Length: 87
Image (cartoon, rainbow, N blue to C red; front, side, top):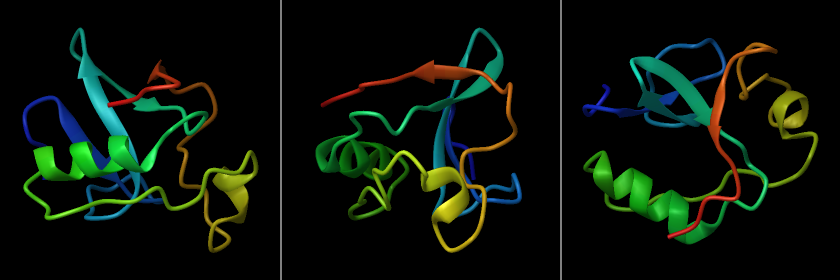
């Protein structure tokens, strides 16, 4: 499901069509903080993955544990490559 250096990962850490955005930087995958993530960013990322559109599922601080009761942000200590990303 990865398109070169970008992918979407679900709450189980598996590639999926919905989930957290990850970029490969220096050979290592890392996520994008949801702080400041915009609808325009989600749309561009999803279009880069050949989807028609995209959206920010939840932009709250407690997103990791409270969105449908699952941890969508990955394991603690995993790298976060970008935050406050915009398009």
